Length: 404
Ligand code: SF4
Image 1: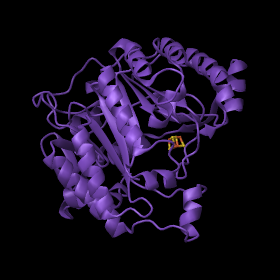
Image 2: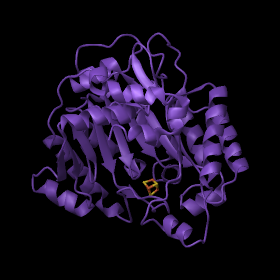
Image 3: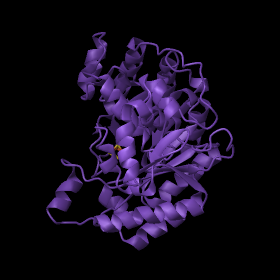
């Protein structure tokens, strides 16, 4: 287990659809928060060394992943370079920074116009070992960006992307959403055309989820604005699948694509630019987490930290681990989660991985269920793995509920 999630719960402004644990107008707490985060990292247990065994070529298991550190949020790009450097120094005892895939989520709205020129900031990230940038673009239609409450325009998002390339980033992921209020199929076609022209290394595209307690939810339920129906949102998703495949992107997870692997013998089922950190989640691997509201998973338990920023800082200042709750996991939970997380991957769940993670054979545990789902055309298998068919991906929830 050499994966670490770091939560940075600050944003300049709350987006209208967001229900993450993040806060606006708390910039004056950032310095104290960084100190607390470093102190929490000093309290975390050092993870065991990764297993020595390697899987057969092309079979995806926890042991085939690189170590990872992921700065998520919130808006990690609100932190200064010295603050990020202190956090990485504190994280290095847990996950070796120089060997890790280190990702940072960035908001184009915070990079441009900040005290440090964007190009200098981006070069600084690289010099700290942060080599993967995840840019939240969401859409390229300015009126829609305003409805979403984003702090940037489409032109600023593109400018940030180009600056990141100029700085030397060779691993950039872009986040998009579809099914947005008032979005037409033609709007989405234009977005897909544009993002293909940008040639990012990795893409995430999620259908908008209306979360209760968000301003957007209230606007939609009161009838002030409307969102595309399921059929239109489904057509948008299918369009992305078709066009991204034609453009050479490998669709490796339900909502994620990456440039196809140039080393097919090493990993034919997973593209070279697949996000190693998110693969750890989908493989149901163990990972540490630190920061307000951050969720960690170390079988046989998962935990999450105190959500409130001030309460989090206070707990750490008292020398305590700032855990809000610890949830015990049974062996049945481990097997079920390994299945329904892993089936999100097009590579599916490998028998090797399941046996290594759960200590029991996949077919002995789920043989009847797998046969039933295969008979319904929802699941297929080969010598290495079981995976969803195209029909199974469309009816994913029907498959996943068999394992819950
Ligand atoms: S920038 Fe991201 S984390 Fe912050 S409010 Fe918007 S969606 Fe939420």
